[in-house]
Each structure stands twice: as C-alpha cells, then as structure tokens.
Amino acid sequence: MSDLHDPEVRPLWEAIRDRWVATGDLTAIKSVRVTLSGTGLARINGWLAYAPSTTRGTRRPRLTARDGRVTVPIDRVLEALGPTIELADILQTTVGIPEVLQPNRRLAAMKADVWAYAHSVLPGAPQLLAYLRAGGLSENSVEDRRRLIDALARAHTLLPLDRPVPLPRLSLYCAGDPHYFDLNPPGQGAKLVMLVAELTGQPLSTAIAPNSRAALLARCGIHVDRISSTVIGFNLVATGDGPIDDAIRAATASRRPLHLSLYDLIMHRPHISPARPVLVVENPSVIEEAIIRGCQEPLACTSGSLAAVDHEFLQYLADDGVPILYSGDQDSSGENISELVRTRFGARVLKPVPAQFGGGVTETPVYQENASFLDLLLGPDSSDPLGPMVTSDLPVDGANS
Image (cartoon, rainbow, N blue to C red; front, side, top):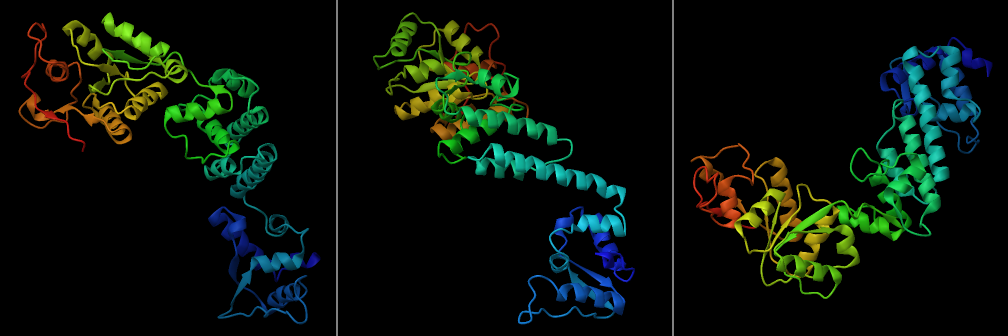
C-alpha cells in the first residue's frame, strides 16, 4: 500500500517504533497515543473503514482526536492492512528500525523457530514444553536449548526401551555425552525425568526425591547408577529371608560394616527389625569410631547429602516402623539434611546444645568428629586419646521440632 508512506501518517509509525524501543517487544504494543493532522487521521480512518471484519451493519466508531491526540488501536490497523502486511516491515521501510532493535528481531525469530521445532519433535510432552518456555530464551542460550530439545526428542522416540540400559548410555546416544542427563546439575536429567513422567501419565511433580526419580526412569527402562553409591550399615538386625537380609545378618555376626547399594535395596529389599532404633549419621568416621569403641547399637551412614540409595533405605525403615534417630554436623548443610530426614521420614534429630561447647551460643559449626559429639552418639570412651574438649556429658536436643 503506497499510502503507508504518506508523511501525514508517519507520526503513527514513529510512535510505534519509539514504544518498541522502550519495551523491546513489538507484539506487546496494543495501542499508541499520537498527534496526527486531520489528513493523517482521515487516512487511518479510511483504512479502518474497509477492514475485512467491518460491514455496513457492524461499522466501528471512527477514531477521534482529543486535545489534539488520537489513541490508535494497533490490532485494528493491522487487520485493516491485511494478513500479508507485517508491522516490523512497515516500520523498516517508513521510519527505519534502530540498531538496538535488530537483536530483538533476530531473537524473536530464533525463539519462534526453536519452539516450532520443539513442538514438532516432542508432540507428546506439552507440559514439558511449557516448562521449558517458561524458563525463557536468550540469544546466548538458543544453541544449548536446541541441543536439549534434540536430546529429549531422541529419547522420546526410544521410550519405553525394549530392554533396560544405564542412564549414561542413553545420555551418550541422545546427546553425545554420557553425563548429559546426570540427575544433578549441571546435568539435564531433571528434564528427562519430566519427559518420562509425562509419557507415563504421571504428574510432573511426582519425582522429587532421588529414589522416586530413579523408580520413574526405571519404568521406561532407564537405570540410574545403582551400584557406586551406598549406605553403610552396622549392627543392623534383619528380619527378612532374602539374600540382602542374609548379608546383613552375616555382617552383624562378624561385627563388620556392610555397604548396601541401590541395586541391593531395589532387587532384594531387606527388612530391618523395629525392636531397636537405628541411629543414622552423616559421616562415615562415626561408623569407624563405633567399630573402635565396640558400639552395639544399630547404625547407618548416608555419607553426607542424601542420594537415591539413602532415600530408599530411610523409606524402608519408615515403612517397617523402625524408629529413626538422625544426627549430622551442626552446620548449614547438616541442618538442612537433618530437617529433610525429620520431615520426610519422621526421624528424631539428635543434636547437642551448642552452649555446652563453650558456655554460650555460637555460630561456629560443630562436627560429628568432635569428641563430645561422639560421646553423645556412641557413649563415653575414657580411652579416647583426643578426649572431650569441654565435657562428655552433653544434653541432647532431640525433640521432633
């Protein structure tokens, strides 16, 4: 349309361009207020009068000026100009597009391309796509997002697998990197879990705990690492008749610690006696000290932050009605783990009163290797060459709060 270049209409295009510069999003501009001459206003009203949706019986009100300014609805103008007219093209040919907006146009085009492609290769995962879109997209992240979509799309075509495979093999096949779908950041395993949840009809929020994620992936034939990570048991009393129950009994009889893997727990679920509480600790050094001291109480160790095997073991204890005592380092990480074990598995948290380590409240971390802390957990040992720093008679804050 040659009248798009009418100088009397130019103020409209300038107003739209300026708003675009200010907002960075051309599609978000619904209307602009602009000063127009009578000729310019007449020109725009002429376009609107012949819009496809305007008929003699449905003619919309003409635009009018108030205090010399007119509010122009952009959607009505574009409707009147027709579907082949792009607003960005009009601005480019009439008033020009500043350099600051060129990256925005490129990014908008890249976004449209990425999401159109994603919808074509992940047709069965609309919730996952909505989640990915909500995370935003920048010019620097387009390549990484395309790689993620490609990897998920390859997995989509394979699932459910004809036979189980380890997660690193699937990662290598789909992304060229055996660690790409690692479940811990910077791995993209959380997105794979979301894909599997959607494909199996599970809510995306189902697999929050590590063992839940492992179980969900296993439904499609994907096995996370079930071997290298273990929970350490010592003096546990098994009541079942499976091979892992037998291994626990043999280890307890010979007074040695036993490493239980996620594979052991899933394939041969043991049962632990609820007759005595199990003290679960954060650090393996506590188990070492228990062996040295000849401790007779049932113990287990998660070795720091809870992995899938730890969640599985603690859930089994809770399901079997075994009273769980938990103790970790008195630092921010240990406190977080303690709260998780308390709220998720109903454990009673054992921790010394900080004032007993120096006569007053302190923010200094207290670690389980502290002699007084060990005496609290395992009982006093007068032969300890490192001895309690303050006192071995520490009160315990063990309430479920």
